Amino acid sequence: MSLETVLGKMENKIVFFNTLGRRFEEFKPINPPNVKMYCCGPTVYNYAHIGNLRTYIFEDVLKKVLEYNGYKVKHVMNITDVGHLTSDADTGEDKMEIGAKREGKSIWDIAEFYTKAFLVDEKKLNIKKPDIICKATDHIKEQIELIRGLEGKGYTYKTSEGIYFDTSKLKDYGKLAKLRIEKLKAGKRIEMGEKNSPTDFALWKFSPTDKKRQMEWDSPWGKGFPGWHIECSAMSMKYLGKHFDVHCGGTDHIPVHHTNEIAQSEASTGSKFVNYWLHGEFLILKEGKMGKSERNFLTINDLEKQGFDPLAYRYFCLTASYRKPLVFSMKNLQSAKNAYERLKNLVSIIQGDQFSKTNHKLIDSYKKEFTENISYDLNMPEALATLWNLMAEKGIGNKEKYDLIKDFDKVLALDLTETTSRFLGDLSRDIKRLIDERELYRKSGNWKKADEVRTQIKNKGYQISDTSDGPKLTKV
Ligand code: AMP
Ligand code: ZN
Image: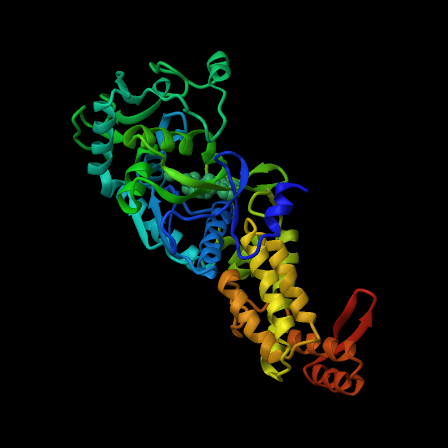
């Protein structure tokens, strides 16, 4: 029996796939019931695209799964508003400077505008606001202190471009990504500049001498700005302590950003930084990557303009494991939207007819199945399957079903029990509800009721006919 199967059978245990070590592990927080979690936030030089938001939905589900299991989560997210260069290998232009130039505004204005826009998108997706949102530019002092500490311990060196971290000083550098340093050195595909090794990275970059940067600060080494990675070490350790439970981000962060966060944090403290590293796989297009730099991205606003409820996108994300790439297309999103609307209609029928039929064993088995699914490395597709089975369950009453749905929605956060929506699609919610209601009566053999509903639909201007693909509507 595989480890996956064995662990999956454990009751009320949370199991995560830890990138550090590449294995499934039972989740054991350092100081239960408290869980400390840090997630890398957006670089605010443009709108977040729906790929970025897939990662934030995964992190939100993770937090809700922990809370559902009784943990108290302290969630910290940074806002990168300085230092993230176009190449993760510390070369190229600052992405924030590019954004400011593109829009003819100051970097500070750009940062404020896109941070607000990001938080609006998160809210539309029912992503709970982190307990602490911290900006890199508000923590320059902490970053400088951390670099000074590393300098004191002999982990840094200076070039004409800045202060660099010497990765050869750490025996286990690259353990997260299982980097093969010798191979990297031989390949030298990474731009080296004056660096001693391709994996060394900037802690502090000097301002250029030929032009003035909008964002720069004095430091013990001269005017400049922090490297991208140091902000996450400085802020996570400030708010969560030197050793904490969970750190997340997209898979692109594994080889460079998170590898370097571990290096500088563990070099600074001399002990383990984070216990569980979880990474979300990318949302992809058939043609390849969706990226802000590729300029082929869609935003939540774009989806809304095309009549999609942002929560239909959340539903779409929940249909795949966070550890698998998810192919986006309008067709795939439309299928998710149809399923989501059908689900909401069924819930509203259940809500409108709250008869009770108690079967504790059955109710407990649904709750247990749902809890096991979400707790086994966030298996949301299976958790949705449990929900759909519950919808069709005849052994318990609507009142009991409704309570379970409300409970499951603490994690799914799909507003399943909210009856209003701005996104009605082509047919009004009322008619969709009647179609589903008639289907339920037909399936239970209550032809009299089914015919009554058919008449109600007709009175609203539609003829319903039953085909092998399900009920079809035509205008009368
Ligand atoms: P950025 O704003 O570029 O720093 O990225 C914000 C977050 O989105 C990071 O955690 C990235 O790993 C993640 N990310 C970037 N592109 C995608 C994508 N296509 N699908 C899923 N996550 C992504
Ligand atoms: Zn980060």
